[in-house]
Image (cartoon, rainbow, N blue to C red; front, side, top):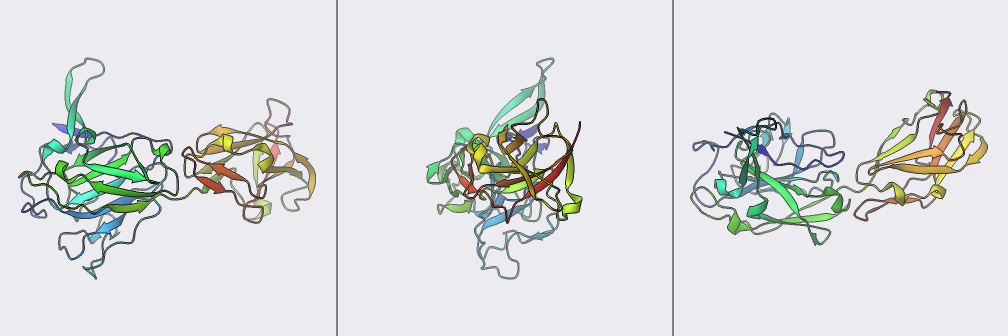
Length: 344
């Protein structure tokens, strides 16, 4: 029998190394010399997903002076907790990925299987049992998660596999917001074990009651399409029916940017961007990405063909994410996107 962790996929989510395709044996290994079954379950580390586009996690908590805590992990290629100073804790993580701010709580022993509820997956064509189960810890309520001072509804799963030298670390509970867009970028978060719900296989309850803290990264621009060129002579060329996209690391609401907050100019060239005309921008896009076009371009074109454009932001221009976090956009000294257009 196999278990697939229950995951909710957010737009642009950064995934941990355990994706939905990962299969975990549901029969926990009873003997693992790297674990410590004596006594109540102890939290060895708490790691946070803060690696956009990758599988790395960074410790926001390391249990001091515990020989079982993770230090150097070969698959990660780095230390999780200090191996040189066993008494050292961890520096609080403040840059959890806004689109998927998940937390992994690693224990020193296996937890009782009752920590999660298993639901068998049926074959979509025949309706027959597949021997594969989805697992979720939600009904067991093992933690309380708060971000920005507000309790967050979460999902999660139990990963019995692993220890302090494997990656991902284990055994562990992985917790993530049910709706990541409801957590404002830049939020400070606390996670507290509901210890009575976290039992080991002997029925002993966890005793770690202190909250574990981490922060979500603030909003920022992560990419533009077309890309900004360091050398004006290498400015991008796009077809005039293309849009300019500004991509963010969070759930930015495109409607939060007003047209008059975008400075759109036709210029002589990207090498010598003297203004020819100032255009009115049209704003569109989906959550997390803002699309900019020239409102005066003749449909179905998005821009006039065979000219050069500059896109900048007006002083004080801001955008907000779905939960109300605000980003003041960079001024022309920090952000100026020049590109040329050609007929489609």
